[in-house]
Each structure stands twice: as C-alpha cells, then as structure tokens.
Image (cartoon, rainbow, N blue to C red; front, side, top):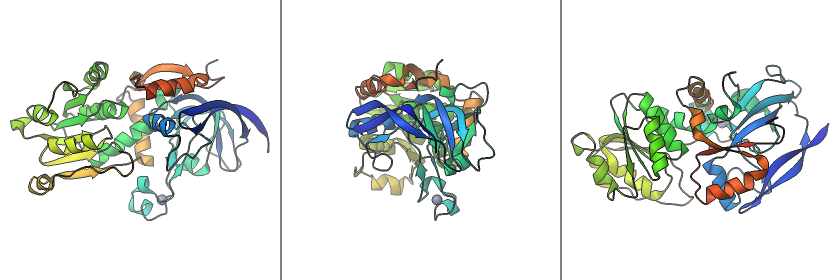
Length: 353
Ligand SMILES: [Zn+2]
Ligand SMILES: [Zn+2]
C-alpha cells in the first residue's frame, strides 16, 4: 500500500491543536480519498478544543473537523460510482441501516452510527458506509465552502421535520448562532412570522436579513418571557418555540414561551448530566409538546444540499472569515474567546492555488 505525508491538524488535549505531517494511506476497498478544498469551523469543534476530547467522537491524539468539501483524489477497489476529479461533500456520519432504530426510520439514533473526523487536513479517506450513504456530488455553481455547510444544515432540516412549522405560525427562535440563524431562515421559508432572540447587534442584524420579522436583544429586554409573549396573538405565546442555545436556562425559558398546545423544540445540546426544570403544570394543563432532536439522516443531508443549491439558504452569508490551515489553532482560540465569527473557512495547503 502506498503512503505519503500530508498536513493535518491534530488535537492533543485542552486547547492543544498542532499542525503536523501525518501518514496518508491509499484508500482501502470501498473507500474514497478526498483532497479537501475547504473546511468550516463549527461550535462542536470549539467545544472539543476547549475540553480536549469529545465523548462520542474524538479521543486525543486525533484528527478532527467534520464540515468539509473537496475533490476526489483516488478511489479504492470496488468503488464504481465515484471517480477522481469529482467535487464532493460528505456528511460526518452514516447509519448502519439494520439496527433497531434504523429499521424504524430513526437513522439519526443508529446504534452503530459511524462518525467521520479529520476535515482539517489536506486529505481524508472516507469509509465505505459514508461513501455509500452520505457522499454527495456538489453542483458546479456551488463553492466548496458553501457545500461544506451541508452537515449543520442537515441537523436543522431534521429539526424542522420533527417540529413542522406552518405558514402563519408565530415562531420564537432562541439563539442566533449558526444553528439559530439557519432555523430563522427555514421558518421564514415556510411562511411563519419569526421572532428571534439573540445577543450581539451584528447577529440580530443577520437574523433580520435572513428573515426574522422582529429581533430582541436578550441582554437588554429583561424578562424575556413577558416581553416576547406580549408580541404574540393575545399574549398567549408562540405556536412553536425553537431553542438553539444549548443551555438549561434557555431550555427552561423556551418552555415558558409557547402557547397552550404549542410545540417546543429543544434543539441545543447541553453539557452532559445537566438537568433543566420542567413546569409540570404547564405541560399538563397547557398541553405542551416538548421535542428533542439530534443529528441528521441521509435524507436530511440531501435536503440540506438542495436548500444550499437552490439558494434558499444563502450559505455564503454564514462564512465570515477565511484562514489557512496553519492558523487553525489561533482561529479556534479566538472563537473560544468569543470572536463572534459565524463560520471560518479553513484552507489546507494546496487548496487555494
Ligand atoms: Zn458541525
Ligand atoms: Zn443503525
């Protein structure tokens, strides 16, 4: 088997990422080797950088980064539908298709979900299952960095499947990070009235540009519940509430904002072992529906690429900074310190010339 060296980012522990030369093997049977043309930073990567590991996905030392797109460099034996030169994007996982959950159509909960990491590198070998289920060709008019937004958007598309927003609904979206902003856009596309709650003025400005009808700065409005409910029909509360912050405070607030028989989507993942309070009176007498959602499915991955392809989700808008791979440690450190950049596109050596 041939192997050469490539440049890749390696996570060693807490806030310790180094750019190194790693051995790159030829793709094994059924694998596809992709030359990465752009990768995107993600809140999950910042979390991993801060903690030095990811319980389910990454134990150091390890390559990481999971939002990327590129060009097929080589294909392994037995790969017939892909060939070198094709522009592709891969999701960061693929379900098995056969387990208890997969056969029930809950592929995001697959008991053998296979993850892919190593997007912050020149090359990545994509495992056969992901090649088969979650490798997609990129339409010519999309750039690599736009296509790389598929993975987080696929999670949001899945969230929208689970809590269908109807035309005419009033929806409150808590959070104006990349995920919150994507929800705002998709809710607007369905014809809902969208009230967005966030923090920074530049994020609230983005929320408006993506379709929020009204925006609220949580740091200045005081009582979020009273303030927001007053902006809904009869001050009853919103038809749908989407929590995209990932804190127990936000989860608890979300449950106060829905009207009777409203639906609350608790989308943001909180730290392990965290517990949020539940107002049992509200859930019972007000008939609340509370829904958690996690990850994506092959179908929502395709749905996400279509949204980007059609321009319904303006991917370019989310990418606010571009940096070479050599600067990744600095970029992650600045994100950790709250630089407020939505997405930074990371370019490995050789991808820009
Ligand atoms: Zn991500
Ligand atoms: Zn499965």
